[in-house]
Length: 316
Image (cartoon, rainbow, N blue to C red; front, side, top):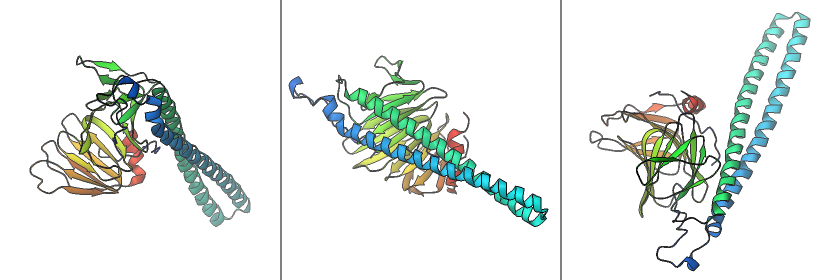
């Protein structure tokens, strides 16, 4: 398990597991059932808003990149002029200014690339949700849909696994079990559409929804969660820890031995580990903690948010 940190590669919005509301009311006659299009309309509208916001962020990132490129060109001109004067001091200052400008351009390029990924994912999620709303589900949709990016499988009733069409969305129900293949990702879009959970490659998770709380059981792999608002308890459970979410953005990873690493980007996450830890830990923005397979927590660490992207995209 790497102790690096993580970034929401696509911060595209990336109240967890709020019930979409049963699309088919228990015991209701077929004529009384709300259409899937009507029931999912607020959900689709939220995704439409997310797509617009993603496009705006992309346009802003492109403008910033253009400004950074102009600054690089100006810095190169200034360095050339300093060399013509043969003034060593001026050349040194101009060289430093050019180095800073090129570093700023690289940062702007990374931000533009992240915004582009965000926009592409937002467009994909919206198309998939519209397609899902256009067809009638055969059972109630409890709380979320998932949009795959690569090979995603869902547990079948017979105990096996079946592949999910990467061009469509899948409605999730209580007890849904998912796993991603190597090199794949999947996004859980949580009702009403403004909270997301990104499943990294080689991740296995089970979603649960109960009257008093909702939770994700993370068996292995990595999750990145952006939880904006939620009306009841929401948790992420691993083999050695329970993470209580209070409206936040964070990432969590679990390896084959159960070792769990948490990184909090914003808000607060309450960590309850094994019996040896009597009081829960409160991990705040800019902090990280690892819980060992025996249930003991290591010392809380301070993390640099700028390094988060390396952790998320590592070991690809």
